[in-house]
Length: 356
Image (cartoon, rainbow, N blue to C red):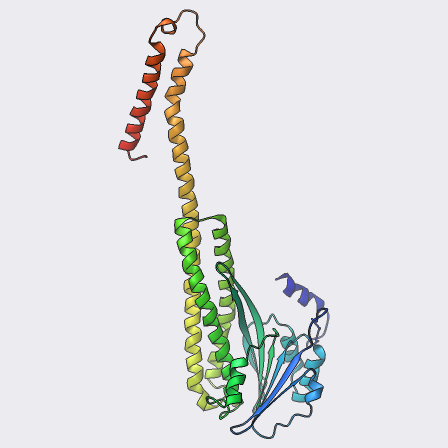
């Protein structure tokens, strides 16, 4: 959250649509991949600058421009000039803290999505959410990926080998393929969460520790992030499914219904995990309370047993000159036997009451 506020504060007083660079020292330049394909042809080229791939030939087939790294203002400005992209769209692309949404600009659709990256080990899952922005035109798709990883490798491989329907259909099907890939990645992360949550659930019941509580809180925060990414995504896919824009063909309706169903399943899974984690927190607090009660019970029993023993030792420890018991030959033995008898009687009484 502080990072978001710093970015917003830097734009205070600037006019709408102003592009503010978020480049960091040593950051790698943007990698631009231009793919042109049709049912029979496939051409792929990589560039470091957008000016290197101009002019773009968009007469035949579909053009896919993928930009890895969205913090470079000059690249965005040149793309905006070439494709007549609204300045507010460029601003949203550069600001990678947008929520998933869809906006119709007549000649193109602007779609914002969230992609998941997760690293998993024996105990923890490190989850990050990266922004993916799509611009869908009649014969082109421009994708912007915040992270520099090769997120769209499966789609590019299908295009290279001519597998599936992607090369036979239009740009809208390519946009659908990207959305479907991102939704599938949610299930990969949720599967990893499933294994960790089961392990954590057993740990909470058997032997909870402060580390267990930290793990529960961390997973709850991850579920909140997933929920914030998935709930708006449902509305995005729903609008695409309703075909409010002529850029979405009728052939795509069934595919969008399928990815919508997958999104609903992912949302329900996230809600289930949230409930489970909330239950774990209650179980942890109850377990710690029960453990504290057990400790207090043991200490109370010990203190209760020693109360009469303390009284006896205190009574016979009085420094009076005339006490017959002090000079009695069997006084010490009788005192010890009396204390043992009292201890045994109290333990028997506690057990009969099921206090121990």
